Amino acid sequence: MVGPAAKREGVAHLQAVMALSAEYPVCRQYAQTAVDANAQNVQHHCGFGGGRWQNNFNAHFQWCLNVGVDAPRNETDARNHQLAQCVHPSPQNYAHCNDGSCQCGNGSGDQLCASHGGNDPSIGCTQQP
Image (cartoon, rainbow, N blue to C red; front, side, top):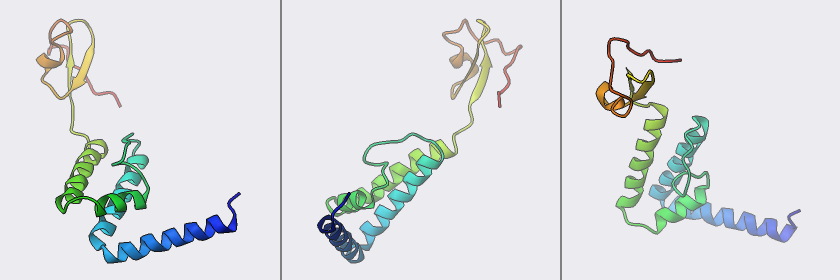
């Protein structure tokens, strides 16, 4: 159980963060965008982790305060790129290989079946739901 002194310290810390965020709107926006992106990460089961992917507004905000002007924009762009690949993945190709397997990925049929005895386009492969 948290005692009254700890609660007061927690409230004081939160008030200090809020006051700072009002003074630094770029970092406030960066931190909120990062937290929102992590919510999408969780919602879509993307599985991203690490400092870039957390729901701690203060951690993102403090990071922003301690880096150069371009870093928050670059980090947001990188986060958005990763998220887009998870939420809207690019379509994959499918190939039926001579060993009887069906391979899928971003390469051509020949590339996908290179280690499976070659590609047999006459058989074809269908995408599974």
